[in-house]
Length: 138
Image (cartoon, rainbow, N blue to C red; front, top):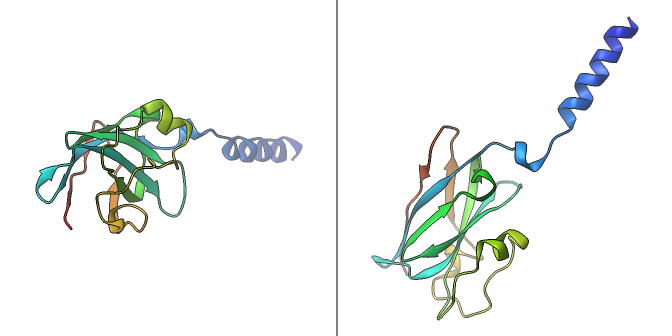
């Protein structure tokens, strides 16, 4: 009896322990256009719903790729896209250090794509890169 109880306690403790790196993730890439043109520069954030670690990447010439920390957590995500006038994209190190940061310049795309984002993406389990393209309009 003692062995059974001890084993159950050990299993429960092991299941409860984990790190962020053990969360299922998948690399994601794609394109972002605004009014039919590639978004020159900016940032894309995949925010898990209802919560979880954020996947971020810089957008350059309309393209992005989220591969840091294994990619974006699996499941439903709210997608926030930030583009500013004359903004240099944040470096990967800056985004990792503070994933909730946003560039200080004036936004050049509507809030429905950033602060009040209506965009969603479902990140599915699988091998290889998942593609998620976003066509934004005014």
